[in-house]
Length: 242
Ligand code: SF4
Image (cartoon, rainbow, N blue to C red; front, side, top):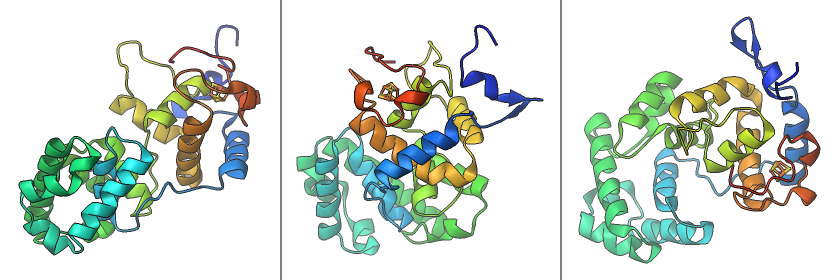
């Protein structure tokens, strides 16, 4: 096994992906610490999509307030659907990036209404997983990560969204190799990780890796000396960005 990492050597058996050997103890430690905290996600898939849109490039306090303001201004999806870009911009302006977000929001609500005849993502509950992901990814500005967040949190589907925290932690744990060409997680890597994580751990590992990434496994100067999963980590003591 010389020259291969602890995590990597467990990935492929006869062409199939197997979970990394350290995944169960890591999942257990993280669950113990974070208790599957759900990061304020919403049961309604459209609300979840709106919340994610509000969260783009903004911290938790700011985006939660932006979402609350939006919901207060447009308490029903019908009212939201009738709002102009100008009205939407006004409601989310203090949260930043308001012009861009309001335009995206309008395009998304128009596309959903065009597809289902009303502003609702409830019909997704009856769709197969692949079809659901395809539709969500067809919405303006929605990629695989966002689609899978909506599917996991609000539709209860077995998917594993890879956000910036899950991506950074997975690389440091040796579950996936960083591709030097890409700064961010590319679609194929999202699929690789999703195939690697057992479905029963999709939700808990995702939410707890986000918590870990926010508290200990920071991009710069991670707090490895206090990290609850340091004993399983290949990059313990890392100081640089990767
Ligand atoms: S030991 Fe350090 S690099 Fe590894 S997961 Fe913990 S905080 Fe991240």
